[in-house]
Structures are given as structure tokens and as C-alpha cells.
Picture 1 (cartoon, rainbow, N blue to C red):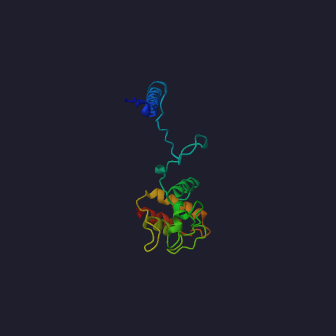
Picture 2: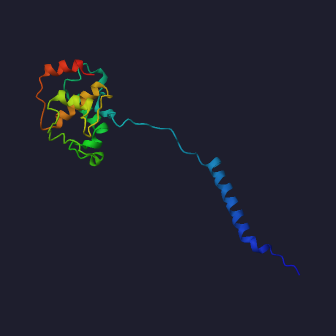
Amino acid sequence: MSENKDHYNRGGLFAFMFSMVFVFAFFFYLVVINKGVDLAENVVDPNAPAAATGPVFDITTVKEPWVETPEMIAYGQKFFKTNCAMCHGEKGLGDGAAGAALNPKPRNLVEGKWTQGDGIINHFKVVTNGIPGSSMAAFGHFKVADRWAVTHFINSITNNKSKDDPAKVAEFAKTAK
């Protein structure tokens, strides 16, 4: 006679039923029990000084950014780490991660063997215009005060310090854009 063959698919039916119960229980947990994920973004500026360090240095208030001050050097160091360290390295030794693939290699700023002339005026020109035919890109799109700050930082770490006359630097700075 005819045999009842429903038992052949009982394993699949049990697996289906178990998975449906699990899915509904999981959705119930997500909708009713779980509080969810807090997506409130607490964005922290990595360049902002800590509250305990005192007043915040605002470079936009500096009247003469070409004059080297400890605040300008500190600001230039932060700017350097954000924009230049990828090629020149954290300490300016020309050993940055992105610089490994460049030809010619990035300049060792500490050693200070300058190809475009020494002095803070020439450093500012190189930061602004780059060096044609090399891997040094132009950064003239940055604010003038930011470029002066990074130039002061470079001058603070190099062994080949600037010997520019401050009056000539001030005269150049008034025309620098």
C-alpha cells in the first residue's frame, strides 16, 4: 500500500522552525530590549591643546607671523606633524612612511643641506612653491601664517640655522602671499 513519506523532510522542517523562532527572538531583542548604539559623535581636534595647558594659541591673531616665537614654533610643529611628517618623518629626518617611495628622497631637514638656498626666506619660498623636478610639492594653498609657522619649526630643528637679517625677512614677508 501507500506509505506515508512525511518523515523524510522532518529534519528540514525542524531546522526551518528553529531558525524562524531564533530570528523572531533576535528581532524582539533588537527592537524591545536592546538600547541601541549611541551614534553621538564626540569629535576631538587632535591639534587642540589640552585644557590644562593654558590659553589656546590662535595663529590668526598674530600680526607678524614671520617673527619667530616659541608659540609659532609649537604651532609649526603641530602643522608639520599633520602635513609634512608623512614624507619628512616625525623628527624631520627624511624618513617618513610616504617618503620611502619618492625619488628623490625627502630632504633631511635636521641635516640642513639646502638646495634652494639657506635662510628662512628661501625655506618659505620652498614651502610655498615646492621644488620643480623633485618630490617636494608646493603648499602655497595653506594660509601664509601656517607656512611661516612651519618654516619657523624647520629652522628650530635644523643644524643649518637661518642667518637672514630680520629687516629683510620683514620686508619679504609684507610681499609674500
